[in-house]
Image (cartoon, rainbow, N blue to C red; front, side):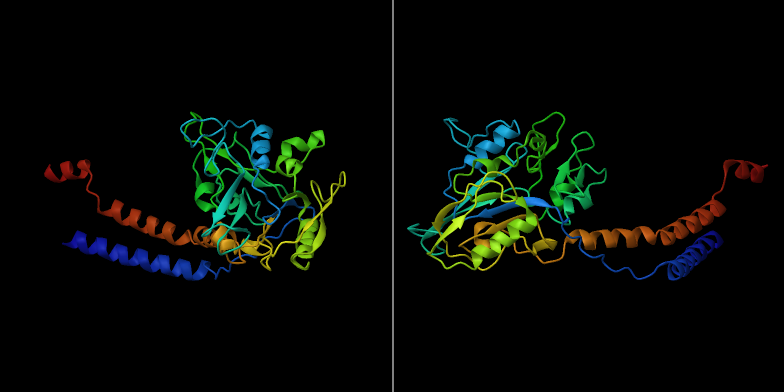
Length: 329
């Protein structure tokens, strides 16, 4: 009975010590500010009203990244992925409504939407990765993936609000696959393959600041009027501009503020939530999650104090065999 009392007294003492230690060492932790895009950040502008669904961007992405075809049909005649994957980094999906008579109409219409990495200003995948296999380039802002550093934990898969990083489960050395804006092609004077081949300029490459200005210019245009639309690289290179009809845009640039902002921006004639884009707050989750982590790590004094006190109590109440034998003698 006395041993039990000693044990309980030790637990109470340990709890008291832990509370006292926490009161002394723990300070209120506030969420850090959401990080902003680098001044020279690179990205894409996707204009769904200009997209014709040809999927030239999907084919170019596959070729540029040496990714194999994925089939969703029995005949397996051509590449038919249904979603992004470890081997499909870019995909055009289709919105359908009723009779599908009018393009970019919410009712009885159809529309397209590009799915690929958004290259967030404050990416959750980078924050969640325990080995820095996901990093954000400080100059271009591109979210890069290092397969050699990856341990296959798939934390990035769980952290991304857009569901972009995909794990290659069929690979013996499973790794993540995602868009990196074709950064491996820059040294040869190329840029994102999807923007290079897009015939209508629906996917446009350049500095995010230039792309945002272009997106806002389009929102200010009169629907149905004729206007000039750039193609390829808006921040340099050959002028490939042409005239086209202005679409009836939703008055919102998706990615300007969502989740702290992204480097891939989007325009649409159909509400974004109906074409598969999630409704996200302006703050990045990474800002909150990292603050919580720092609070927990900073408060390790409390569990350490508990562990120390419990260890002391346990050792004091353990009967060693040698002691028992001495008592019997």
